[in-house]
Amino acid sequence: MNQASLYQHANQVQRHDAKLILDEFASTLQWRTDGEDTLLDVGSGSGNVLMDFVKPLLPSRGQLVGTDISSQMVGYASKHYQREERTRFQVLDIGCESLPQELRGRFDHVTSFYCLHWVQNLKGALGNIYNLLRPEGGDCLLAFLASNPVYEVYKILKTKEKWSSYMQDVEQFISPLHYSLNPGEEFSQLLNEVGFIHHNVEIRNEVFVYEGVRTLKDNVKAICPFLERMPSTLHEDFLDDFIEIVISMNLQQGESNQDQKFLSPYKLVVAYARKSPEFVNNVLLEPPHQSIFKGVD
Ligand SMILES: C[S@@+](CC[C@H](N)C(=O)[O-])C[C@H]1O[C@@H](n2cnc3c(N)ncnc32)[C@H](O)[C@@H]1O
Image (cartoon, rainbow, N blue to C red; front, side, top):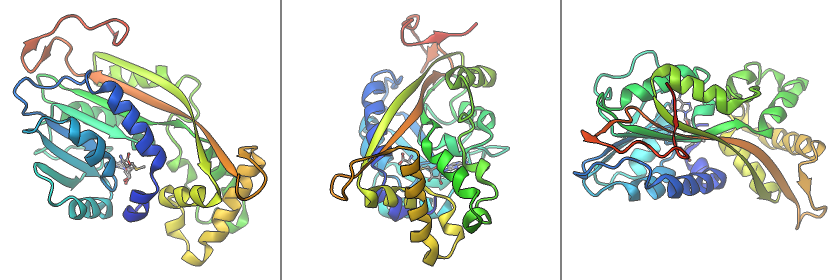
């Protein structure tokens, strides 16, 4: 998932979901009264979701830090958005053992879209998100895949002799919640364990429709971690096998090339959590609304 410019032009699903979720949670996020909010985004990728949908919510004096494990993504975003004020990008592995000191406890908000399914050490990542927030409080909005048919396609591809040598570690690229019988409960439990007291976790069943083979192939190219390990001369063959498996899984609609569609039914985790429910920017809050927040004793 290193091809920043490819990703920037083939992330329709991710953009669609991030926009809907941000519209929904914009007024739930606990904005400071002084307009000096600091926000860190985890796994910003090429940066367009962050700049198009998150930045417009930030007060005019707010500061934005986009982060990503990939230096190639960070380089692309830094260059592409170098003229943006109060915005910088830096490398950060959210699953790291120890956070850089200059980021620890500095942020009012942490957001992350379509990243945490890449992180096998989910509890470590959540602990880091908790510690990025200010000691006195702060909140986070996280959206990532619990499951997606693409993971089953990867597993079938791995059984083929042609591709298996490139895909030995396929399980490392499958969401840590993919096999969970109750991903919402499991994620809530992790949020509790790292210290988030009040949170709301939803599992949303969504279906995205890819119009035509090329659209699906471009999206796979932009996110599939195995392609960059093989010679580019094999890419089209790999993508053809990918499509063949999708068809065998009955995820195709329409017969002719013109009306061919591919369905991707996936489960999205959408979680909002507050570090401290009582104090936000040193202002005592009303008790949270029960239908929005689940309290945990
Ligand atoms: C699918 S992209 C999402 C980009 C952007 N948030 C969006 O919604 O379009 C996932 C990003 O997560 C990054 N990523 C994967 N593992 C990560 C980790 N451990 N820490 C930080 N970023 C990570 C990848 O490099 C990639 O850029």
